[in-house]
Length: 307
Image (cartoon, rainbow, N blue to C red; front, side, top):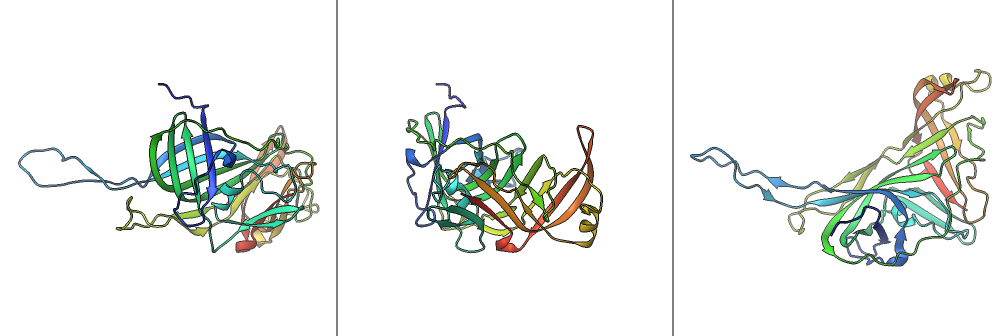
């Protein structure tokens, strides 16, 4: 039986105990695009014995993890103060969450108490179960498009096993387009076409002799938040991008609210951005700058808030 790429889906739930199946169901479905998977850290051990004939003995399989990558829409739940559909995936990428009832759900980097997720990846009749999954993510905001989160999560894998596709229940909210947002850098209303932010998480997969797959707890061991944006060039008197880069001046970056409906708005705020690279660009004949930045402030580096 042929399997269709369109007939795939992801269910995700936060684990109460690390690497213990949280058994996500249809109500835990996350609407995603561009799903792919690969075996991460697969060990095939050579047997380099000396013998009378040339050639190799069969290699020994000695454990593997699995990595699942996908993109998810940035959108609200439809109700202010209730978590968005991508909540579990964001939290599994080392983001802490703060809920203000009836008002907002805010995500920011955390250095401790990282949560893990169980992810069920259904592949048109086959089911892979990832437990103890943690990962990294990037946010991509492009004018005239929908905001997207690109995620890569690594987990301990069981399967595939034969299993029918469950009835997935998705959030009915439609993602707001990235237009009409009051973007600013250091209080200056720069004209940009795109903004990105990359969590830059380092994922550690230490070995464990006791584990069935040979791997201990998957950890987020470090983080380096970076990103880029592309403002139109302007006079130094209006905004000195070059001087700020040379002098290590930090700037606040905010998108302003993206979306206009309560329950389906979000905003990205970066507290201390410093420029790491600056190069010329051209946008339909208009001079621009391609600016790469780093985000200082450790756990206060940025906040993604849904309202």
